[in-house]
Length: 214
Image 1: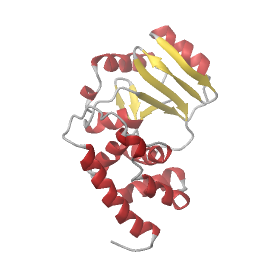
Image 2: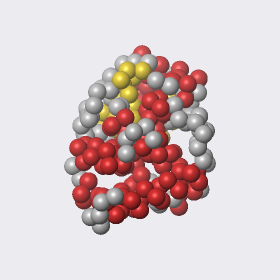
Image 3: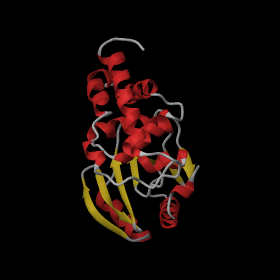
Image 4: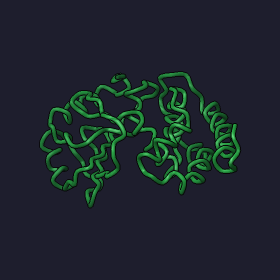
């Protein structure tokens, strides 16, 4: 995996978390996990997910015992904060993994199939350059949207109910346009990404929303 996508302090923080074994029931997903797989951009946020019920206050105390941890939110099924200078979140997440995880520095990294399905959820919930770039990267690593839709259905069982929202979200650039471009490690422009999504949204709309084939 491309651990170089993480700045040195983030690599060190991840290694501490892996060594602590506090996250043995969790896995890293999101943009950082995808960047570790593909090496396409720099990423420094840790988004952890676990099917196991946990106490966010107790977990924050454990994290403070092995490093510097600042709590932003600790309640219910969520813990959000900063560990050794790296933004971090930890959520209880009941949806099944589609494929085995991979170990990096003692941390389980979600498979790209799980990340792809979760990225479709993210693009509906928010509009960031990072999410669009990550979806673009997935498609250009041989996971077309049709495959992502299948993975989404397998993981969440709600594609038919949400397909309109998903496809329309692929061209909702209002929030993303205002974002800072992430530091790319492969050549890519925001205009190129937008052109790609506009074309894909039209194609997918005809195929899935109007019942027309390619």
